[in-house]
Image (cartoon, rainbow, N blue to C red; front, side, top):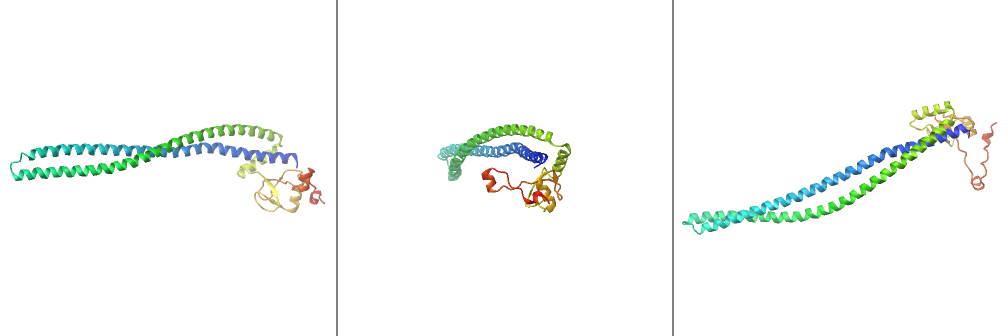
Length: 256
């Protein structure tokens, strides 16, 4: 493979890794924002549970006060009923006492309902608070991992960019310019491998003579369909891999 072809392939690999790192660096804050948003939702749910329990307790206290007031009123009415001089007065006092007692029974029934609801609310709140504490710890740990990962990615990105500068410095200016132009046009993919006589990017078949010239790897060549820089990796046989000897030259590579 010609040196400039090797360099341009290396440049594409570096750019792919650089783009992956940049995407990850951008995605990490979004990931943290998402888990923090989820956490905020759970915090609001716990706060709502606390508010519901407080409202329950306030309602019970209010009803208990009402029961106390009605009991005091009924007690006074009973005392007054003893002093009634007519049957009408007696029945009137009796009616008011019955009204107070109905109010007391109704309030006491509601207090019992609220006590049952309060027990359920307290259990739910306790479970939610425990889960929230665990989630807060998990979120903090995740944020710390994200900070560490971002720092590592930034360091790796700087090293890759330095390596990229060295590779670009070794490329002929016109090849580098062509690479950047194609990369911009083709969404970052300027170099493609020729596999089974086809461009691996656009998947169109290559002309036989073009493919033969590409296999010789004597110069930088461009796909006649999509315009990307093409390269060819000759397959290695099992014997080549075992012995470490270079692969045999395909008859087509020798030319006519």
